[in-house]
Image 1 (cartoon, one colour):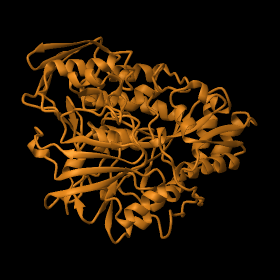
Image 2: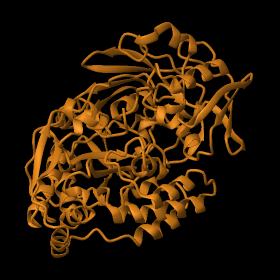
Image 3: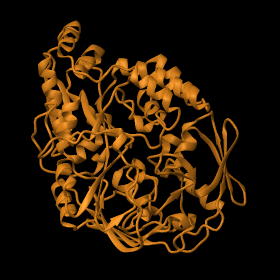
Image 4: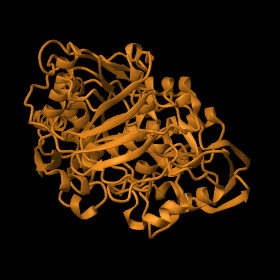
Length: 544
């Protein structure tokens, strides 16, 4: 499975929202609440004390809790509270020790992880280096077929080199790999439990046996997952405030919004776009907005049709009212992007990234220039075919805006609406993309590293390079960056590649949405950044 990350793989969306995409449009009633990076928060007020339990809404039922297959929203939102990795991504987007007390780097191709002593799995057994080696080797085992395998492709060996030490040898320098140890790519599970459960591991029948602040208590198929507090959790600073957490599967946007407003569920990271304005004024809770590493983009999936000409791609970008889409789809709660990677993904050298980003073309509409580009490209008459997800309000608005933009500049764009199951296959099955020119995504970087997205999508042969984009300059710069440990030097290489990518428009960048977190008035304490996929956020929630 490639990184086509959106809530697509399993989401069943809400009723279709038809709304104008003009720059003055809003979502629901009232004026759009425009996003301002200076007003975003990274956490909610600290809890006042313990709480017996709370309920959290997911937009779909996880497909698996096996860390090797936890590669999407619902899966990781649950698993981040149960299983842990060698390193940990913190709410302020830093990478810190977790099950490893340290990560040392004696040479360019070696990483040594010293494991934490006295850590217990949920069944009471003690974590060992043998558990770590066995867990990590699953990532490179072709029989397992880990969704994280691409990030392990550069690994030569995984060895126990001490009583509580694991050493990983790489084939070549790789600055992304150690950062990915803060994601499920670096998860440690009980070897005995993995062997005992076999193919049932991570399923409702097999469960998991990890080290986090919660354990899996019950998986009610089709309804909910219940976690119980781990009283023997090793990290005293993250002891859970709640005795129990229930994750309710609410696939329909309207149902999820209603459950939040009625108090049936206490919170969610997946506030439906159509409910933003109503939840801003909800009497029983508060809606928070935080910085996200997510970006919505138009994936150009084929260069064989009209979009094979870069001028046509540039023309569509210039004709598209991206601020209007943001206002209509999200009530203004997103930032229109100049590049495919969201600014919140700049985890270092931010001044260098910001200066380069500011130098990119401003996200302004220019219909006259777009028409010139179309004429320059020979005014193709073959329709551009765009795939969208049936019933999803946000993607429907984007699709209609693209169709309108194409029409204004003399292009024909057809919308092909696909059900959830078929749409999900677009991200990993070339046959499913046959006959399509574009489809839509809400991508994200796993860690605050732009290379995490740029290298897999825009390097020749990248795992998610769907259209075959190949630029020797981009390959050279990103290839150098992936082996450059000096952060400023790496940032300069990435931003140079970014300038070329933005000029070539292999994807069309749209916007970076804010993280939208709703909390019932009775709870507080959760981080409001995109870290919830890999950080034990539920442990921080307690009584308001």
